[in-house]
Length: 148
Image 1 (cartoon, helix red, strand yellow):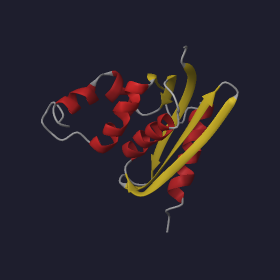
Image 2 (cartoon, rainbow, N blue to C red):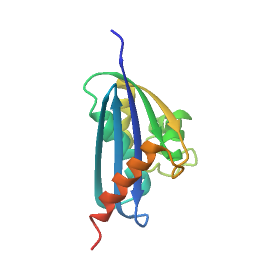
Image 3 (cartoon, rainbow, N blue to C red):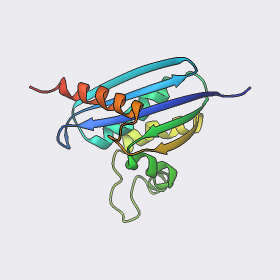
Image 4 (cartoon, helix red, strand yellow):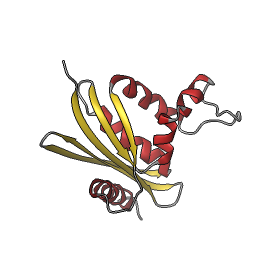
């Protein structure tokens, strides 16, 4: 059976790093489009970028062929250049022996990358890309909820 093709766009935002953060994602399947978002009171931009990817992929009910577009070099390079697999093999240590960041989130993402056929596409953020702008607005709206 052919896998369903899904497009996912994600973004994370943080006010201060660390600080209040938010994430946004848009999933597109055929004619259907779904937006989702969330946030945390104390987090980092990279955690929000990763959370957006995890939450979006977690919504898929069966293995899919996914084109995932992000403006996060951290997320896309870590996967496409294989860094995350090296960190995992070394017990979440980088090649220089320093601890890899966000192992808890990578542990959630890696099984999802095994389930789905995910192709990462990096785009420049804040460059007028329709869905990246939507994700950014969702993410910013989430972190703003935590302003005192």
